[in-house]
Image (cartoon, rainbow, N blue to C red):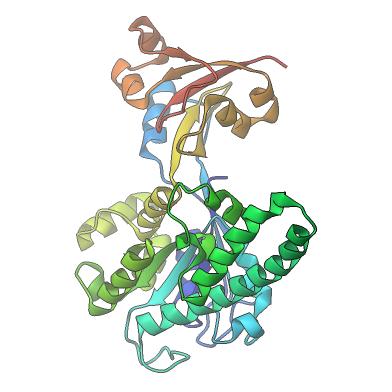
Length: 365
């Protein structure tokens, strides 16, 4: 599995339409709130040109792409944190994802009613973020009460966690999401991660626009970009209706369709690239047995941990890794040629796997 994204937003902003287009999972789409009751899940292959190019050289019997999982979570409304609409049942689903994709309506269409009247992306983002922060505030306050008792009993191990919780409580109270309570790299972020707060997760805003806006700047999109800049998030634009058309085409037809529109990539490709960048993810490849396979890991992952992504025994019994970069492999034209040219390196436990590495792990259990 590559990574898991929770798709959230207000009702009738195009969440399920985009989910269907991206994952082809067939979620129900309708023009009324709470169409999505149980979270729909769709798993898609991550488009990977490098994997395809490697396959052309080695002709493997099998090739396996890494994947991305989408979870379509029911539309939130004001008061969701207090049980309004379908409330905490769905807020809880957000805890299980790696990142949050917030769909924001940035199109006008009188045939698709907006639950709060006129289209206003800033208002919509503020409503969703406020509900998530209220849930987090409740979580932190409960934790503070518990830790405070432990600190008073003389257990100093909880003192630092108490300070972190109080800092997050103060930030949330001032409208600052948990992920921005501390600077990147601060050791407090490790404690923050253990709290499993909703607003501690990375967020990607997806502006759902009309086809006319897709290739140019739009006033709605600009307002979302201002919000994203303030909270350190990213924004991409997707036309949900157009993605639905693309999803119905064959792979070769999709490329031609995009070229006719003057677009370089689909919404799915943009979303995956932005997601990888947001979470600091990279891909490495293995060619063990008949299978060529792509694997997703975080930047900075050491070789033994990367081996563990394949199987726990490989991490426990790790000996060394034989590495060739994607660029060197393609230039050499084969693994044997890469070895002859001295392009295959032997790396130990301290080696940090790089994006595009082709890896053969040696291990003994």
